[in-house]
Length: 343
Image (cartoon, rainbow, N blue to C red; front, top):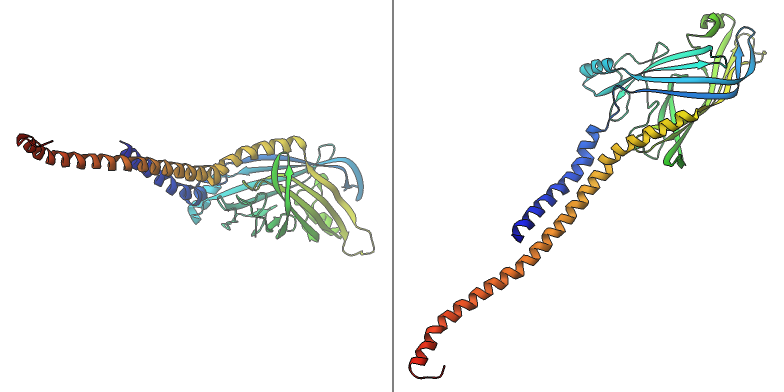
């Protein structure tokens, strides 16, 4: 029975040892992916910000500017792209809505972002745009890949419609999580006007006045290294309206402020990321290592049982050998007794 049990344990140990790398290198790349139907909203605020008054074309200080970023997964469009390209993709339709202290709209910029569901690389299947203008993304946006590396990435900026490196600046602690801190500075760049502006103002109206829109920002992200999801984001943002035909005139500050995610949204984001990172760790660490460890323990137990079984079988075989020898000697002893010899 011990030998049979040791063989069963050894078979299970071999199975678990083979399962460990399969979980990490086969199951994980296929099962870990961004859900196609994601829906998220984040609210960011810039307090004591500067905002242009389009009626007077003068900057003014306001107590607060609010940015609402809505991200919605377009499931039907993702299925269409998957049928056309064979890629397992996610299509995000996003909207960045800026409002003043009175809640009135300042600008709104929609986007469509198409990317690989597993590796986060952009998939150029048509339909990518920023504010209705077709773009071809190079690099990530909004989210990093699973299992983030300690290196720089290329990050897409929706204002400039271009990508530039976002730099890894070290590991930090944030709300009980060890996160990677990334930072990107976009230098002053001429950018398009949003197509939707307040008070009936249009981009064409501003261009006829001889104005251009220029923009710079310092972008900061605190990213969970397991899921690749930012748990916090900030920008030190500045926009100017510059005069094209009158360079001697001072630029008009269109917007300037330190944009931060509101605390309640930071809390909900941290809670969401914490729950999701457990699922990724289950596939990348806990199950593979647990399977390998249990397989090693069962293999050791099987060898132990086998070692205990061998001496017993050897002893039983020796005893049978000695018993046969005794039986072979017994007739001689009986013959000696019948002749009167000593036993």
